[in-house]
Length: 130
Image (cartoon, rainbow, N blue to C red; front, side, top):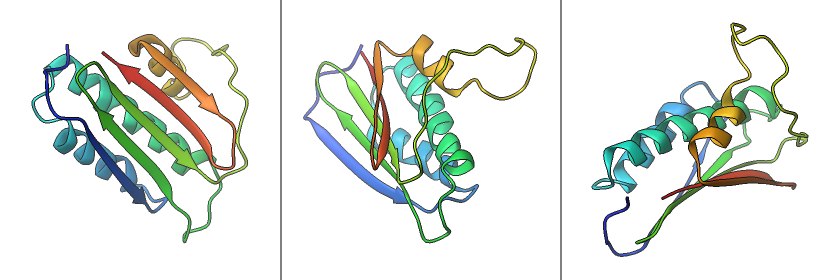
């Protein structure tokens, strides 16, 4: 459960490099300081997965960016990850469970209370945790 605090919003833009997921995790931990540990852990994992997807699959040039917006209010946490890549269509996982990769969106679906994809540009994947 989210503790009663003043609403806050943090927006960051990250270069599409392997360092981006770590920077996104740090921003989530800083912005959500004081939130219940299970919510903080889920938010940190999910933002890492989504930023990794953007870095790996959006095909951005080195001068592109991944945008992360972290919103916190008394009722929920909402995180949005956007990139200016070509977009994608979500398809439920059909590969064997022991195969590496492809777990980002299934984790978002499983751990968040609500989530979705907003086609772009930019393409935005968002999730909410209560």
